[in-house]
Amino acid sequence: MKIQKAQLNYLKMAPRKVRLIASLIRGLSANDAQAQLLMHPRRASQPILKLLQSAINDAVKTKKMDQDKLFIKEIRVDQGPMLKRWMPRAMGRATPIQKKSSHVILVLAEAEKVKPVRFKIEKREKIKKPKGKKAKHQEEKPEHQEEKAKPVEGRGFKQRIFSRKSV
Image 1 (cartoon, one colour):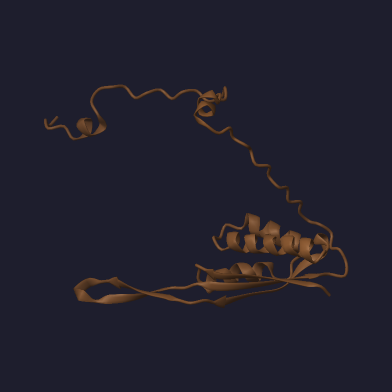
Image 2 (cartoon, rainbow, N blue to C red):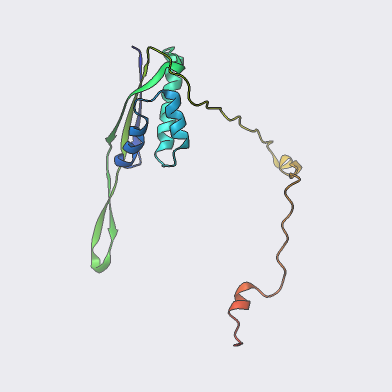
């Protein structure tokens, strides 16, 4: 059984928060895990998604593994070094702050059988924008966008609300 290992060190998030996402994708196929991470709202899903995509690309290119057979054999989140800071409080006291970090280890393996694909992930094509000053002025505005009406000159909001004369 071929395996591919990928590691992410010094992720500036608490391991407890990253473990929630790691346990979500443990044992899933690579395609299903990517779909889960793409749609998950937690902040920890983005770095794990990048790590997963890196491991998949590395497995396909260097070890000639089949992308459809890949699954997450193991994902482990360990605690990294902790930055210790102090926050000033009332009456001359100080409260400790611990800025935690994580180490994530991801192991992909190749399954015997191909699992049916549940999700199809399409890659977005990057739109190339013309460079330079001339290109900026040459861009045409879409028809549905109209120029916004400028506010009427006159007394400002503060002057209307906070007038010196009482009404």
